[in-house]
Length: 599
Image 1 (cartoon, helix red, strand yellow):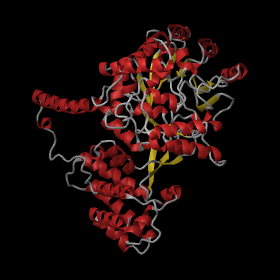
Image 2 (cartoon, rainbow, N blue to C red):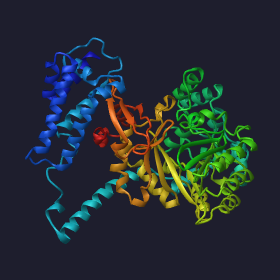
Image 3 (cartoon, helix red, strand yellow):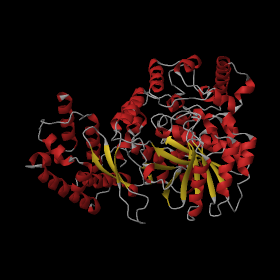
Image 4 (tube, rainbow, N blue to C red):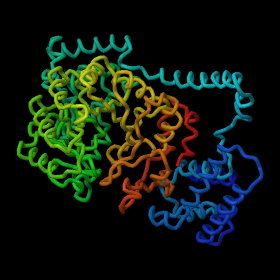
């Protein structure tokens, strides 16, 4: 530990000797703060006055680095983070080893080293010696050279996306046909049963024993499923969704599919601990503080959420509301008719609400009669102009989307008066199948739009992995809508990705796609307040870097510039730890090196 610490300390000193010496010469950390602030402000003035020609994009990285460093060492940031970066850097520079935090690791030094490189204009992002060849010419020659450069960029992206095979590819369809036949034999079903959603629901797989007959489970997967059963953590998978899993347990292609529903052991343990702790809540989004009446959540002026049905055909491990669900397809999941009508009556009285999201749980697991009753009641409210249905059914149970169901919903889709829209949740190209496409098209053929909300997790965050999903979704009739940074819940830490990786993905990967295929907005869901957009620093600010390499952010409420609301402070996952996990999965961390320069 000490040898590694000394090595990192020397590295930090060699990257920016001037700052290191300022820290060493300061008598205390307050003086060190004064020295650093004076230096950084002077550096800003020099950058803006200098006659030296600097590559403009590197200048922008440098300017952002200086601004970020100033914010990190401000007294306000220290107060909000409850940690003094200046004091810690001062102790490191002066060789004070006493009381070093036990969680100090390489991730902290990587953050500081890259920040020091940024403020010197030495990020290394733009390592080419000159501008591209086309910039030297004009007219047709410039156009041809530029087109050739664009071909090279597109080919690189294309080759990356080809790594992620989809469920539409013939070889995958053959494999899944074999899976289907094997599952039907085990469940004693026939081909006609497979396309019957009621048969699928009756045969939801709830145990490691049954699942282990259909696919090969690792000892860890088997143990986690058994632990979930013992501790009443909801677990269940439709036979159809099991057929999307490869029989071998290497997770090479089906990693995102398995990870959706097979919980890691530490997730189960964390859920159990949280349940037993009276001081903790699993209601991460604090819906109890935004629920004016049973079954309704309201965080925005013109939109309300209605939750008539509190379970799904299978439970996603990192679901926002899985803490509310007692079991897969629980018999008491449907709210009593009186409570549903009372909630709809409340919506009727609030005329500023223009849109209702019907979610849960998954409302399309309800019978045709019950879901149509809800949609009909909402459609009778004159001020409701859009009814949105949140469902994962097209992904996990596409045979549920019958012609009768689609016809029933389409009756209330009246152009110019009211829209019925479906919002689903595809996570990976491997989930996109002919059956899912047909389910989507049943809505589209009747004029209803279908949108996708993806969650950005470790399972779909490799270079161009999400871009491949967007492009495929658009081809089957689904518009990308939101990409959520994984919730900061303790029990889902295995799935979390640094916020800046989503910023990097939007800027460096999604940006290469057609504008029609990259319509999704990257967001962080702030407890109680709602969605915070991640594209721009005007919506959030980096406050601190902790000894364990984790960043601390201040998120701004959507009400900013409209009305007074508090900001939200949250601790992110470590960039360094994330890159190490990618490396363990076969990725080259160098391919992600620009991630350090997003703030």
